Image 1 (cartoon, rainbow, N blue to C red):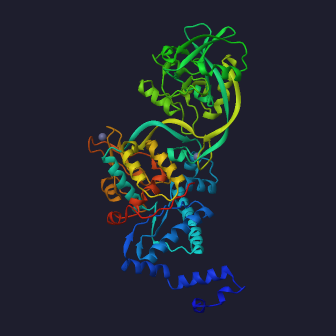
Image 2 (cartoon, protein in one colour; image 1 turned 180 degrees about the vertical axis):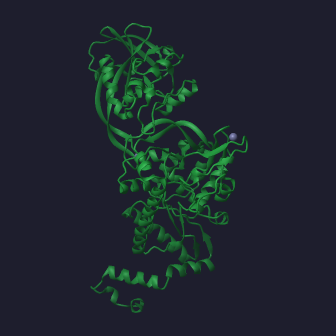
Length: 570
Ligand SMILES: [Zn+2]
Ligand SMILES: [Zn+2]
């Protein structure tokens, strides 16, 4: 070995150059002589300054691919450069261990089809064990790949997102949000994956747009107190007509009443020509033009009153199945008449809440219609599309149906089409501190514009972060609620939990389901029993919390904000 490092050695230029052999020799030299450890110790003692570094942790649900390797090489080069310049850098490894990516990998290995089967056939305890085994399996793969890359990372001080001490740090961080009312329960429309049976955050929705096929239909909704008068509506999600509650038009836009055969159709004036062309209607006559706001309050005949008893009941309410004015209605596409399903859409939901119209969400966890959906009960949401189209056709309300291909959000892990559902979830109300967040993000020095713009524009949307997941392998949401008076409390550490718990935990207790769920607390307000809210945290919160959770308080003060981060776009 030594001879190779002699100055002017000619051996480097011979034709016998064998990179793999050379690499092996150098790696063995580093390992035998513990070079990474020695470099770290040296810089800890003698340095010209300290630089914080936080590893954006790889998820241990698969092997390293070339994109990962590229990121790791960048991180390692930067570390070596800074270390050679004389800095001490906290170049610690970190491993993202929990969440859907790992769960789905384990589900596949166990041959489980869905969450229900998982809970019934496998059970939570065994499932957690299997998740840990999977994590360790991929950890070994990653270490072996890192070894080949010659990474100088500090693996001894690595953080693991599934360990109790890490979860406790997340809990402490959440406690601060809780105390500032930045964390709380909300009823809101969230993206939901029917396969994984959990909600997703907006960031996750952004990860999974795919081109999919959907029905595209034009249909009529009859004005109640007028003869043969109809609103013309377009949708690519026919199943949402089952949960339809209102139709929206733009108050300031012009709407046309058009004579077609013996009927009068109402749609945005500037859309008349393209829609008539689309529907191949040659003979039509413009009767009248009115402003959107003049149509407000008109009641229309909801088509499925006879099939959905609940809708018949809701129909008696004043604003249900009437025309409302909303500025978000886009009159440059479709018909300028938008049907609203508050249980299945964010704008729709807000429009209903504003008017105190009830939110009708007749779905179970598998996204199947419940008894409340009458004749449609038992059908999976998207499977109801064809039945809805059939019914409309039989009632003479269907104008056209075709299949279109368009970009639609799918689950970033299981690739199923997402459904929007109003659900009870826990949110980090990041929108309330958004100015601060955006300002901090703008102060970062980015090396590339495209990811910078993407990141900032996402932050500027400022939507609340849906933090709760209805899954198993994750950091438990540390909130207990009283069954009697509804009071809630957030527990911020294992010690606090064990002190307050009414039960004595088993020997193998850890901060995961099902163990945490077995502990109940006594309500300080009324003496009632408090049970844990059954959610786990979004796994992006695990990795996202790492600048805080991977350090102690002292370290956090010293190393954060960090000097350098490498992130990839999935
Ligand atoms: Zn999914
Ligand atoms: Zn209570």
